[in-house]
Image (cartoon, rainbow, N blue to C red; front, side):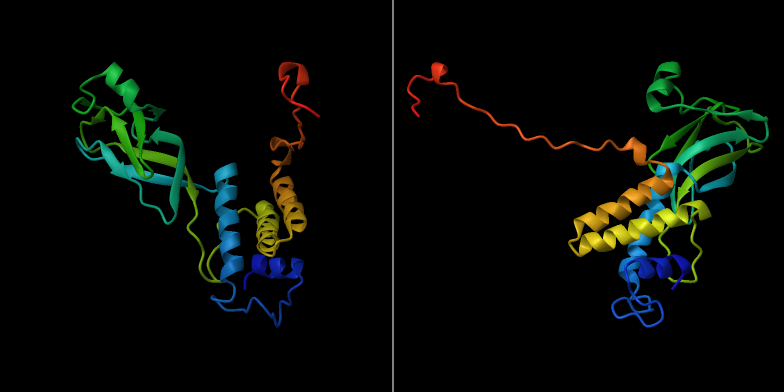
Length: 219
């Protein structure tokens, strides 16, 4: 088991040397590992903390390109033309159709980029030649780790939060809502997001039927 899994077992009161429930095997640690993976992916989505730089050589008159990653593409944070030393602005289909109805035909040095689906990027105008190289900075949602030797793609500062997320899910699966809520609160606090979630105040409302409006009601 890795360091995060060990910490989770400690917090739920399980032995880390001879565990009774979560054995130190891939199958035995699967429930804890699934929770940590969920935590890592949610933390990256909330914070954008795992970024990659992706270099993309453009081809003549090829407008769309598939981004291939080990995980999943979250969103683009910066797209820079290395060749022309300028930043490309983000656009969308509506703007392109209004600006240039022939946007799929127009060629030239790319001025803007177009995210399509979950892993495709397009450029406008489409490249007139093959000399352009684009530097893309993006947020990647890490793929789930499967063994205790796999790299954890999570900042050190957020590992404490991931542990509390997993512990919270453990107590929720055991029906202990109070303990689960405590650790989920600690998870949000470790991320600095606790104040963004308003605490809902439960209110009980009662409704009475007024007799003067309903003369047939007695009692």
